[in-house]
Length: 116
Image (tube, rainbow, N blue to C red; front, side, top):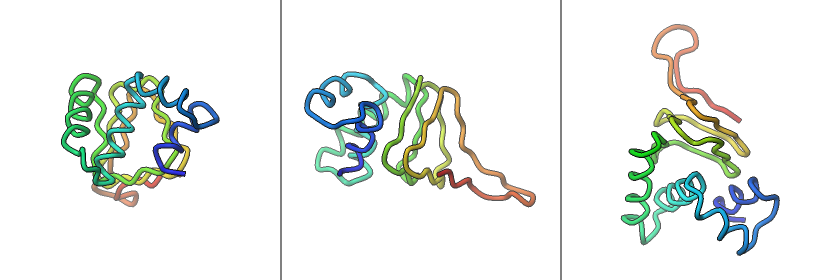
């Protein structure tokens, strides 16, 4: 199963043309699909980067290309979500509106979180 299919499966519980066509019209899935295509080195990377940039500016979604994100990511009310560029998210993580996964620069908890 491809990683973007894991995202789709997490939303619907199955993978098919009908589910894909339903979700590609909704911006959280379209954003995540385009983001996955850019990070995988797609031949249409320029187009996908434009889609990602549009949603980054319009919705405040900031998932850096260097972040490691496992399959099954679910963006619920995807507005104002920010990840550190070194963040690591495992499989089947859900991010809600206004989530910031940052880093701590000093103290005993210094570093970037690993979730999942």
